[in-house]
Image (cartoon, rainbow over all chains, first blue to last red; front, side):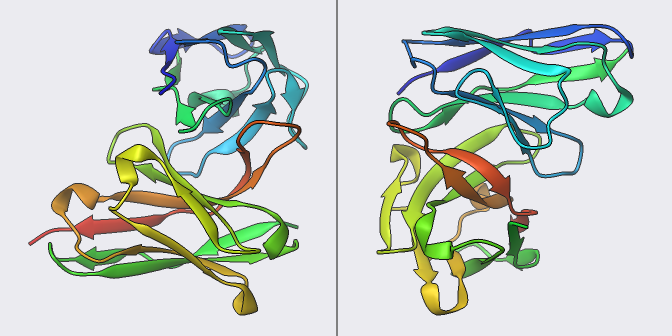
Length: 107
Length: 122
C-alpha cells in the first residue's frame, strides 16, 4: 500500500498570505495525485487532479505541482474560505489511499 | 448538475445490519464508478472501495474487504453500502462519490455526496 505523508500537519497563516502544502508518497505515483479541500462540517471537494489540473470551478489561486513522489499544493493569497483541511490522494496503485491531511488555520 | 444525495443519519446497535443509499442525478449513472469513503470522528479520509454501476463489478480496499458490501440498483440510479453485523468501530460519516479516471490508473473523486452519519452504540 502506498503511504502518503502530508506536511506540515497544521499551518497557521493570515488572509492574503501564501500557503504551501506538501504530499510525499512512499513510492512513485507518477502524476496520479489529487488534492481535496474539506471545510468544517462539509463534504470534501476536488481541487486538483493528476498533480496539476484544476477541477471545474476552482479558483486560479489554487495550483498543484510535482511528479513521482513529491507534490505541492500552493494557495496564493489566502481567502477566508480557504481555511480548511486539505488531503492528497494517489490513484496509481490499489488500494487508492489518502494522506492524513494538513489543517490550514487562521492565524 | 451532478448530484449525489445520501440517506439520512442512522443510529444502530452493535450486531444490527444496515444499508445506506446514494442516489445519483445529473449524469449517466452506469458510466462512472461510484466510490465509498469513510471518515471516522475527527479523523481523515479512508477509501473503502468502488463499484461500477454498469455491471456491478466491485473492488474493496483490503481494510474493508469482507466488512461491507457494495451494490447498485440501476433502475433508480442508486448505490448502496451494506453491513450485516455492525460494530461500534463502524461509527463514522460515510461518503459516496462519483469517480473519474483519465488515462490509466485508478479513479479520483470529482463529486461527493453530503455524507451519512452512522452511529453504532449499545
